[in-house]
Amino acid sequence: MVKEMDKTEKDWKLELSPEQYRVLRQCGTEPPFSGKYVHHKEDGTYVCAGCGAELFSSDKKFESGSGWPSFWDKISEDSVELKRDTSHGMIRTEVVCANCGGHLGHVFRDGPNPTGLRYCINSAALDFKSKEKN
Ligand code: FE
Figure (cartoon, rainbow, N blue to C red):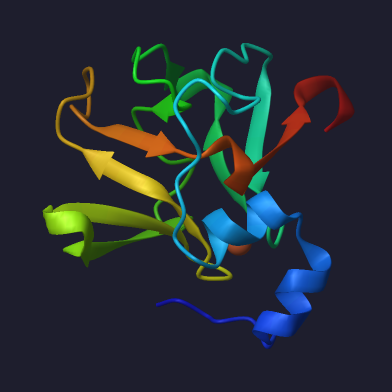
């Protein structure tokens, strides 16, 4: 269940950069190959840029060629939630942060083994914690 944090849209707007706000709170998508984590290869943990919750691990990141950071699994069972998204004339599965409800991206069934999933995530929705600092 999404535990919506007790924040207003005004609070989010003050806290996030314009691009983070557009993606996380308005279901925006950054242009392909524009985000800072597309080719990012450090070992560590990707957390929600909105609330800091751990979402994805570098262990499960792969080069999809799509232009967005891609993961074949989430970091834990309850880190993200999936929602049916019928916007823009497509049927897709939206991925949101389970903690704050922020929009992260979409998940597709054309990923590598063992899951066959491709979590296609906007860099703007993520922050990175490198392993050495953990
Ligand atoms: Fe979050």
